[in-house]
Amino acid sequence: AETSEMTGAAETSEMTGAAETSMLHSPVVAKRPDVSEPRLPCPAAGEGADSVADDVMTSDVHVVGSSQYGAAGALQCLDTDHEPRCRDGEGQVDELILRALMSSNLLRLVGNASYVQGLKEKMRIGKLPLALKALSIGIPADQLLIDVAQAGGLHGKSDGCIIVGPQRQVSGSSRGEPLPLCREPLEVKSSSCRSGDRTFGIKSIRRSFRHLFIVGRKDNPDDWTSLDALDDKCSLGYISGEDYDIALERHLVRQGRWPAASDEPQDVTVTMNSRKRTGWLSQHIRWVGFKDLTLQWWQATVGSSGWTLG
Image 1 (cartoon, rainbow, N blue to C red):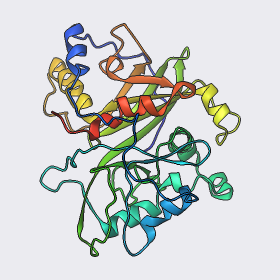
Image 2 (image 1 turned 180 degrees about the horizontal axis):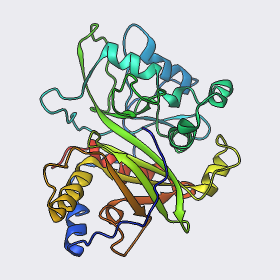
Image 3 (image 1 turned 90 degrees about the vertical axis):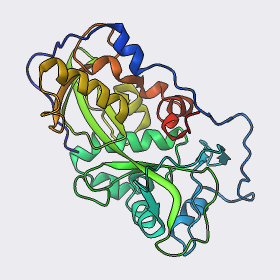
């Protein structure tokens, strides 16, 4: 998705009170995985990230959606018994599509220095930092898929997807047969600070995602491939598609433009961790500095969308 800086004064739409924020962020009872005692069988000793990741390119698909890799490359295993949240087949993944999506995943290509150096600027300032940071905290490349295409790639209008479903191996499916996995589309936006070091302008947000990630930066790092440089300059904002839709509807209703303008791209100004009424979306985005981003934060904030509601 294209990213650019906004100009003009920050939006100051009035919120109707703390009740709205509490409704958006009210706790949801969910079956959360117990990550303290992994229960899935891990690969045999000596099998590293490459051997497991390459499984998706073989004739029999083996998807280990719960695998994650530590800093030393050791495979760890998480487990949850939830079923996929596909709605009447919506977002269901078959074997051939899965292979194609995996082959165009930026998380699989960031290790190629010549490829990374050739990335266009719009890819560098948004998708690349997210891919590098996600890998560094243990997000597996068979769970988070970021499209290498800037627009019109295999993910269509989306920037990628998150694969959700039963956290167990899926193997032996016939070609083209739907797998018990679903893909949830994601959008990646990026912006540099336009006021102080906490306010960002985001352009053209479209209602076509289940997950929206905002890579905000104080200024450009000296090296886009250096985690230390990214940690010093960048923060990650997140909002689910459900929360975004609720906030957008309330905003447009107050303006008298609902539902006529509901499908129009939205330009917004957001302030990180704002306690004031600075725009209609600021209070609903969850922020974390890159240096403080952990697998636990990801699971609690992003990963919860894959759990079955109880």
